[in-house]
Structure formats: structure tokens, C-alpha cells
Length: 90
Ligand SMILES: NC(=O)c1ccc[n+]([C@@H]2O[C@H](COP(=O)([O-])OP(=O)(O)OC[C@H]3O[C@@H](n4cnc5c(N)ncnc54)[C@H](OP(=O)(O)O)[C@@H]3O)[C@@H](O)[C@H]2O)c1
Image (cartoon, rainbow, N blue to C red; front, top):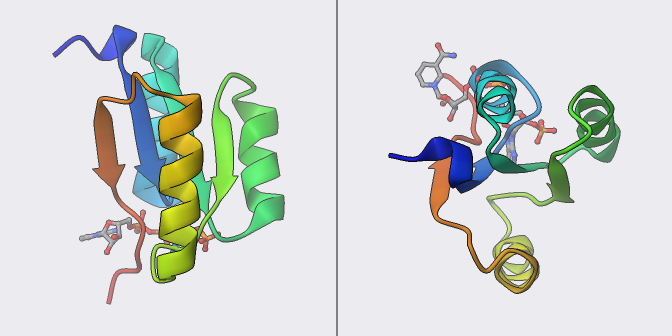
């Protein structure tokens, strides 16, 4: 798969496994979109990886999912990979 030329949405990309995906995929040159619930944490990740795009969105809230879908499909019609990572262990 040509990740370098992919547009990749990572839910829960502000810590742990998701953040590591952000690091590695931005390093490859992919267009990376990151979600999470906490705006400050999202802004911190954006400062660290300035090329990413951030969206505040809670995967447990249907209205957030709908808003995210509408925004992302409008702004990134080339979106071709989704890493549905958000969640908690245990
Ligand atoms: N770590 C492990 O050993 C392990 C093992 C098996 C499976 N997993 C799975 O792998 C995924 C990541 O685990 P992790 O350990 O990297 O977790 P983590 O460090 O706690 O990171 C979770 C990420 O998801 C976000 N998040 C949590 N709830 C969310 C929600 N409702 N909507 C949107 N974003 C949300 C968090 O940001 P906010 O809190 O700001 O939203 C954060 O960015 C989880 O689904 C977990 O179940 C992990």
C-alpha cells in the first residue's frame, strides 16, 4: 500500500498507539488527520506535528461522528485509510 500518498484518519491519535501511528505516518509523508476528545491535547500534538489536521470528536457520540464525517469528507475527498484506534484498554 502506498502510505506516502495516502490520506489517513486516526481516531484517538493523541496518545499511546494512535500517537505512534501519527509519528510514523507523518514521517512517511502521509496526509494525517487526528481526532480525540481533548482540545488542548489535540493542539499539543498539532504543535509537535504541524502538518497534521486535528478534529475534536468523541467516537461514543453519534452527533460527533456525523459532524466528523461531514467535515472530513468535504475537506479530504481523497481519504483512503481509517485507523479506528480510539478507546481505552481494560
Ligand atoms: N495499549 C495496549 O496494550 C492495548 C492492547 C489492546 C488493545 N488496545 C487498544 O488500542 C487502542 C489504543 O490504546 P492506547 O493504549 O494507545 O490508549 P491511550 O494511550 O489511552 O490513547 C487513547 C487515545 O484515544 C483517545 N480517546 C479515548 N476515548 C476516546 C473517544 N471516546 N473518542 C475519541 N477519542 C478517544 C484519547 O484521547 P482523549 O482522551 O483526548 O479523547 C487518546 O488519544 C484502544 O482502542 C485500546 O483498547 C490497546
